[in-house]
Length: 558
Image (tube, rainbow, N blue to C red):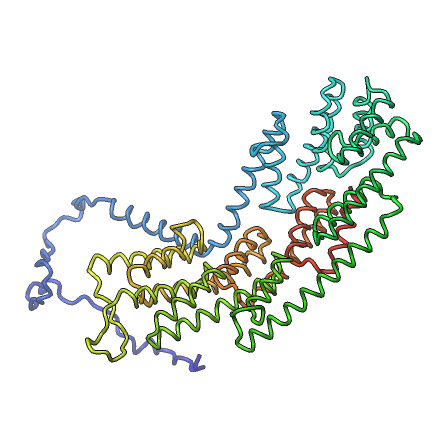
């Protein structure tokens, strides 16, 4: 603003507007504005005062009012579109909750997509703090517990056990769950003497059938339910523990640390007081530490090779070989995956330079390696379209002088199709459909345009803008608590720009959000959901020191 103030107008100097002599209007010179001729009939001076006015239709005024209402409504929608967007999920949430309540009332508790459990969990995906959905899941758990008790009385023990496990997952244990489990085990023992169970358990032990249904551990446990002091069953459980301990050691010798940890966890759950647990835990931890040190050496060397420009080559004296060695031991290692992405990006840069220097064969070889490392990279797709355009275009000069090949002229139909594909790609990108659905995603539409016109600047630009769109959408969805969608966008960016510098921070942020959700779900007693959230957090940031604390909180609740 300039700060100037308008001078007040002297009302004495104001000139009132006048219509002039309307009777002389027809004498005005005609303006040639190409509009139809217009004449104004002079007012009839002899008209009586009480003569009714000519009939005029009210429809023009109605149309004006309706137009104003529609305009105002459109303006309101425009100014309140954020609120309307917020109302849409709420409407969807209410519909899901209504379906869940109906399924619960009909006794469709779990096991199908339209069951009460699945519907309440879908509601929680829309609103993780929905008290209605949380209470609904508790009601489902109580109904499953009652179903288990009814099945025990009806001697349908397999059904009872399945219902009991559903109840345990939803209610997180408790005295009534423990009592029902005891009743189930006693019912399972009916008709089987302790000696019979022990004989079957010993046979399972000899066959190496240690855990699972009718495994040695389960059979010995059934004896101990009836008689906790049965010495033979206790000794049998110790033998199961020893056999599992041997299995852990064998798995470590084979370098199978994942299965070794899984077996150790199983042993700890079956026999939490087993004397050999501390030594086995120490052995698994040492194996993990040794493997981690080896991975760190590969990662450090790989980064050094990247900076030295040693991207690929024979042997292991290059970045590609070092990162691949890491992934052979840890297929989900984020740093190694990012390293492969950086190798691919470097190869794409070299390929573009080779094309600029009129060496398409060299470019093709470089891109053939890059496509194995980052097959969906946006930069790779753009470079490959350049190579195709280069290969299909005749040279600009007839002599041997190197020159940039001139792309063949497109037909009008081809030009129109390219423009249409680019426009559709822009719309898909705006909707956030970056790589899905196949064929209709922005990625596929831009590539389709480039398949016709490999040098189309708009398609090239659109394709290379997709990583930034993915970053922006990720930030918004993470802020809104839509963690599954944020995970999809993270995966999309990993495909589009595998060596992207923003990926590590994005992964940590998403992992932290999953960890916070796991802690909140555990506090609500939703231990199955908390475990799934914790698994996502562990996958994204396995070394985060907060994970054991949340893991213990879930374990204590169960």
